[in-house]
Length: 308
Image 1: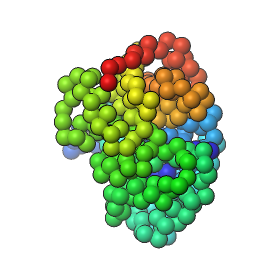
Image 2: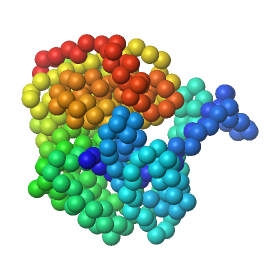
Image 3: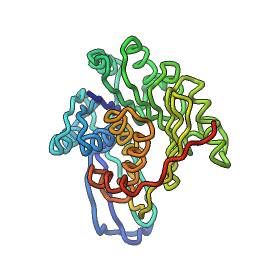
């Protein structure tokens, strides 16, 4: 079983506005309300690809109830820890040519709530997958994901971490199975600007040297690079298509990679599935489904091995 953890889930209110203008009344030409949060996006795409999983995390108030209802309607199993006060956050995504986001803060999560989550994760068994993805609520330490992995260090889990800065750094000593920085996050982590593919590989290798088994660097329209625990580096360009939606593409890549790897235990096939899942989400207003991914796989660019 794969478990995803979203510490600060949201309702995403996506508004389409033809020509947004500040300081005046704007009217939408379309709108959607979706469950959001990186781990939840991973759960939704895994579900679309036929991979059983369960979404864990914290929820509160009427927005938390709606997140749970929407996920249940999609057939996704949830096991949220309910907070006594506040409401799960609402993130507003304004699409008018470019996309503007206003992300809510979310409810207060206390130490006792974290302890409840850790006790639930204690029940995971060898062979399970665990995805720790996204930001954490204010007031929790940057070491949170590291603390969780320290607690679970005796279990043989496939752990995926999709986080930034210190939140990611604290996990590396526990040798996560996969980390997935995008290019901007990789550059921010090392305070550099990568000028070419070899420099991207060099800095991704530094993350391996710090402990990550496999490093998947997403590069938006340029596809992705994968450094494997076997000492190989692979590059795959993105399939051709028109990008219409940036929301959840990176999370879809994580889900696709996991779905591909669990099915084949082949890193090249997992990379192809991941890139095509990310692209399928980017080319649609909705998250990737199996039909869209398999269509892109049938016309996917060749995977190239790179020098390390």
